[in-house]
Length: 205
View (spheres, one colour):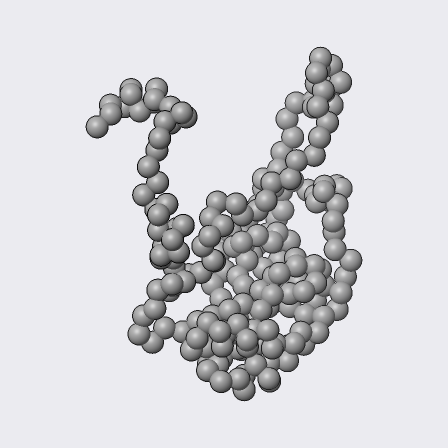
């Protein structure tokens, strides 16, 4: 076994590194979360919003609920209140992953979950999710790269105390760029998900 010093100074570049899971992945025999089945297991598939900004006016789940194998279609009107972190009060104006799903009718981004279809099989759940019909009131989405509005306070006062904005500015980037000997002006885009392209998104709970 290498020592801490050897581990810190040894580079894997140029060396053959065994990929233990490689043969399983290329042969199609690798097991992922969605491949496991347990007695009594049900499958859930979300229904995603098809607009980027607006409000959900109506959900028609009648056809989906009548499909074979469908147990339920959960949405804001029938799922009840979901746990909300005290750090994310209802009127904070901040929407992130701590916002409970199906919490309200406000559509904040394309693909936001507005319902969940639960069925005996994945295929039945997927078909039911596709059968849900949504009616929206559309608003113009904010596609400005600078998402922080002008004159927005750095600290938002809430019933649970002050919430500080995570964004901050340091230094003088415009001056540094103007005085730089070498300038590179380019836009780079990084995909949101790149680390596990073979495995489908899935969770067993």
